Length: 108
Length: 167
Image (cartoon, rainbow over all chains, first blue to last red; front, side):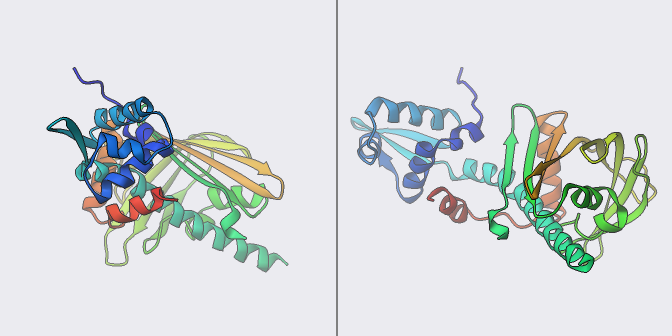
């Protein structure tokens, strides 16, 4: 059975985010991805494994190489989660900033 | 000046919580008042273009805040916050629910526990809000509903999301 992982944990890591950005532009082989980073290949493999387990990327065997691609649908799930709620709180608090500054001005 | 104010938004799927931390350029008493007085809450709580309307409020343990977020095109989204614990000007806790205009709680929809704390940060005030849902499904339901009703702003495009990853 495949281990279920928290996608938020997956994207919390800067290297994994960088891998997602690379894959957003194109499908890439494991070797080509590893070349972009200044870390040991097994480390990159580990990151790819975490991203796969979250279904954020999909692996396809082509000949001797494994190619990875971004699962755009899954990325959007995360986007929903973070962006929607974050936006509400950002907007709400920006309004509170304005209110606070108005009150402080009137007090002077 | 404003952009130096800390803002953190952490979604924890394992514990079904959202933790929001934000600094404000005002003293703790004033920030507390803005969270606990109806005439002040009405000025900021609902994100634009929605506005906030308070029907009744008793800020005490066992009291409640019965409010609506009003969409300029007509719809009103009613909520009822029941206050459980209050310790001025440090913290308060409450249970938020969807309700109707009469203040009757909609038991079909998830409730969320709010734990709001206020802390001095030099000249600034740090507010931390921890919103806890009973389950992950509850939180997902709230998000889906918000999107369906158009209460939550349009989803940001994947491109934009990835753009923020690049920094």
